[in-house]
Image (cartoon, rainbow, N blue to C red):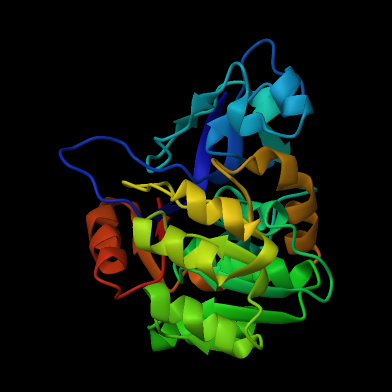
Length: 301
């Protein structure tokens, strides 16, 4: 299936010239002969993992581990071919208003991933939640925890602009400390107990240790940041009783519900885009996010 993207974010550095980008939404230009669920002219959203949505892993709720999965990573282009279109794409009720497109785009990855972070950490109504990471995923994990009924949401952030967005999304407290000091501050704010749910949205050794140390005994820690050199201490985990769950977000599982929430304007995740650029300036979008001059860049063809 060929798709003409309407908006594309840039958030990943690269070496050399090649198509990049795992997030997309847009209008269907043409479909293969076997595609039945979408048709040309429809506005659709898909996940960064194409999936058939019918294999056992998909049925269990993990389409990002589909037996036929393919990584969709070339969305920063005028056109995008989406494999396994019937299982991957979800059509919007109609063509969206222009102001909805940024929020709809977040569903494809950063909101879907933030939502999984909250779901994997067992966020429940009335819970105390800590979010480690203030990038687009971390900020939307705050929004997701709020939507799931968390009463107290502590965001870890050192950047004023991101702290403001976190508060707009539902954060009730901000912690600027990191590592052991950050975990200690969470304990201080929770009478020495720790958070019920901790959402790790970075993927470093420090963030993983900080997250597991911030949870209460028997608490839940999700990890959605792609790990880089992460090694956990088995003895520490053994005596913490912490539940761990994470991995590549099964975004396709959440697409229909997140589409509904955005379409009905109950959430506005598009606020994470604070820089808009034409597609040919993707390199500047990457630089701006890498240098913390922007939270996330929106690219328009």
